[in-house]
Length: 199
Ligand SMILES: Nc1nc2c(c(=O)[nH]1)N[C@H]1C(S)=C(S)[C@@H](COP(=O)(O)O)O[C@H]1N2
Ligand SMILES: [Mo]
Image (cartoon, rainbow, N blue to C red):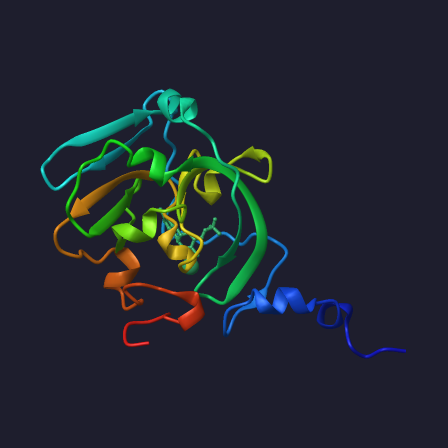
């Protein structure tokens, strides 16, 4: 008779290597939202990139769908300590969306339907590191997980992956977002355990 539950014995070594310090694995997909789920009809949905020279690049839902689609499989790490490995998504790389965007600045402020914001360096959105995703696990992205579309930036804590994403404003100076203003770390690297301001 074993007194060790399968859950503990069943964890594989390669999974441990993918788990940042202080995190534990989950199989379900928790929902963390700071407010109610906004509902945006697809015929009124748009995504925008606003540059420092007040140029706005806009995409309708149909235009987003017509762009080259990628299917990243990534690990998610939430600052509340759960990690979910090997999640499968579909969406458009930020590299594709930034193709015709001219900018000389370093900072990005991501904003969502419903008012949520989060900031990160522009370079963390580029070079295959971030997507606007609209499908999860082979299905349309559920509203509670950010549907119709959310940002996915898996190398940073999940609060940077803005749900119900509406746009990205490019800024000369860093502008802290919702959680960053509330004492969370400005950058949020899970491998350096940057949870709170000062970590
Ligand atoms: N618009 C918006 N995006 C958000 C949030 C939010 O409250 N509003 N919460 C963030 C936090 S703290 C986390 S951990 C993840 C949770 O995503 P999930 O609910 O799909 O697990 O979304 C992030 N993106
Ligand atoms: Mo979170």
